[in-house]
Length: 619
Ligand SMILES: O=C(O)c1ccc(O)c(O)c1
Ligand SMILES: [Mg+2]
Image (cartoon, rainbow, N blue to C red):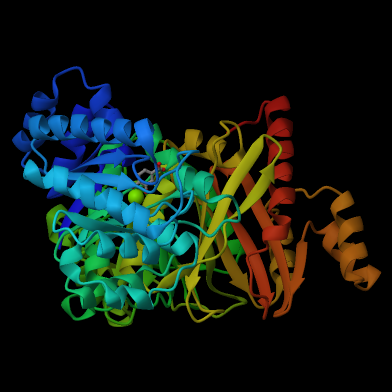
């Protein structure tokens, strides 16, 4: 099998698409005919462009509405096909990909379709060409791969083969066991796509929401195993119709496409790549801050019960800790490997804990992800980092390495205190829309984490799409919320503008005793996000708590939720001040991240912003 991608999946002109595809390292490309139609040169020049970039032109696609016609309509369909064969000769490809018909006059019948394809195959063969037949999920008569295979089988012509497209197969929930009946050499093309599970018509779902394998929810693992069993040897070609991919950033999209291809190959041959490991928690969060601003942060950390337990031996950086919670306050003006263009205080890096860091790093490298090796930037801590699409770093670290980092990189100042705060509960990233699927792929491909269903947070200025990556064994120790918004003024996009790019927007810290943590924050006069009063009327009505409990939450701006696992309390501190902010949570068996409260938080942030702007206090 070899890598390929359809031009429809990228943004830009044909030349831009081909450049991005070649630079990412693909071997082949499917030419979507619209891209040829608007190409300013001839078909021959388009073919030369593709070959000059070292790519194989896998197929011209799609050819539509061939089978099931009679009389002149049938004749015209074959004439049209002959003209596409002329085009293919000039382009330099031998395969025409044909979709099952949507023609209003097309008649049903597998034998009729098989006879049409036998004739098309015969015409193609005369010119040294081949045709491949695909069942569209919304095909008029043929919308199931078992039927398209039956057409190919009955056509019984060496120049007629099958297309398997994972979207069409999974979107109709067709069983995969019948793949075992198809000899690998009769499959001429495999088109790979993933997708979120949505309930909408097949065509709209396919044309707008496809994504790369590893970004959606289809069972591509099983598909790949069954495909290997057929002994198929041809291209694995991503065919992705996606609204975000069409908007731009083709180089990044193409690179992700190749990573996704490596992921598919690893599903087919799991023994070739180290297994994905679960994430056991957030090892540390590193905050980049200018020295003159650090005192406010130190004050907040102290109020939260953290102590400054170490000073970096060579850099202007401090380690603050309590129990398993570690925050590195980095005051270096310019630190190698950090994202460019960030002005404000921001989270420049965080570390994720795995059992064997070396295995996870090897897996990430094998799948083609960008890694920052410590040697490359003259760092002595020994930790390799994934370079997140947002520019921040995701260090991969195991317990032994982490202990060594603290012992060797920092001069110990104090013992790590015990207190009510125990660890990072979750991180919430706000990112550019085009980074969303990129990060999703990275975490899901490298680690054994799974996404929650996607949901929309209603911000006063628009919707924020949100999804949580978490342990497969749920509830587990790791949760990473991904947020992105198409609306320019939502809280997540305001944050992007302030910080100068995607980053961690809030760090949620878990306390075992919210009342004590709140009292300590109040005693230290750490401001918290003011929650609208009406929220508590609704909490009281929904949960029927003791009114005194609700009143305590109201007077302390604590948010509440409960699910089948248990109760949840949250409080946001110093909102908007340092661009990112802390959240303190207490979870007593609760499974989620307080999603039902997210719209209240977004509105409260908007109100806080308006107040601070009106008062001339904007930071
Ligand atoms: O949406 C379409 O029309 C379309 C075209 C070609 C394909 O291979 C496909 O899967 C869908
Ligand atoms: Mg297809």
